[in-house]
Length: 187
Image 1 (cartoon, rainbow, N blue to C red):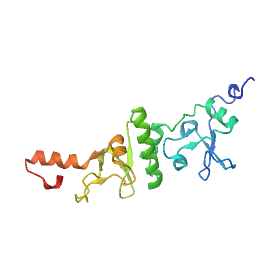
Image 2: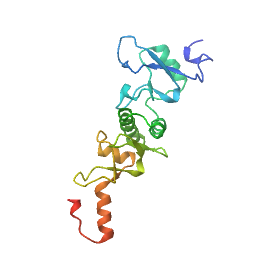
Image 3: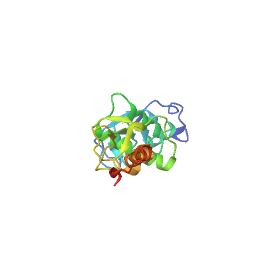
Image 4: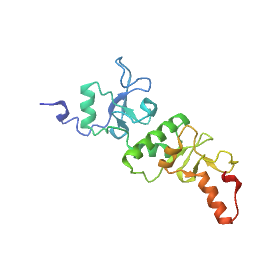
């Protein structure tokens, strides 16, 4: 064979080796390797790095053989938006730290690609993950918010908007318009 990637057993390979959760993709020291489906692997991330593990595996790009296996298996340059959205919507939902990493990486992906998955969930203040359509950005922090679901504070307002969260301030303004009264809560 002129090239390893043209080997017939590598086409459609079910799993690709990725750096373990303890490893850093740019480290020169050998690390443990975990197998991921090609759809759940990437050569790098926009923001989150190894924090996406165990949902997204990062292929060690310095190993030429592993790189060829991954390329021939269709591993993407960066994590796929639909895989991150699916993980955020999963039951049980990921832990808060992983959910924040997935959401910020998904926002970075949407900022570049603009193709939003049909269903998106985001981490919220109480540590759970909720459907983005129910979540508000905390752009009115003086407002008592017991009955309102607020986006996790580790996610920026800009990322929240990109993911599909609504503005709490805009919600308050709309309520004032509908009732026809001046609202002090907006200032």
